[in-house]
Length: 230
Image (cartoon, rainbow, N blue to C red; front, side, top):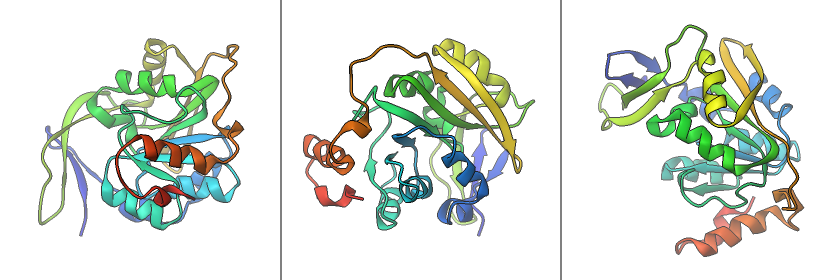
């Protein structure tokens, strides 16, 4: 049974659940080679990128608002927190790379606000790896819902972001486009934050990366802290 992302204008995009739930493919593995550690995966879903990064010895933390996705990610051994990127994020301003993949450039329906927020989470000299739509796609705010043959979600704010939008979005958020590439029909961009002097430690300077997750869980709400340990 297919699951689609449907826009108000009727455009229907199949969601690649099998790929998201599977093991990292060659495109994912190439992405791993482009990150600087440590890595924050925004909208990590079932956590395949977080798991792949950890397997490569790269500290990574995932964020997702869907309890089912967080459960799946933790079952796979990923270090993941259940929350929005617009909520409190541990290590803010100290991540070397942030990921916005698998359509997550549309989160919240306001790409400029999203990239502005993520730009504050990476350190000076850090980067954002973002997956976008192909050239010629007109970006913009939309409303969308998820549909299967049996049911539909409520409408929610979303956005389309094409590769042609990267320059003006980057400029609006004080980010520069460092690279754009295409692999197997998927388009990606690298947005970079200007380097600057900072006395703040990077997240990887902490004695134990898992301690960052545990500390954050203590500051948040009740719940089993041990669940986020990798």
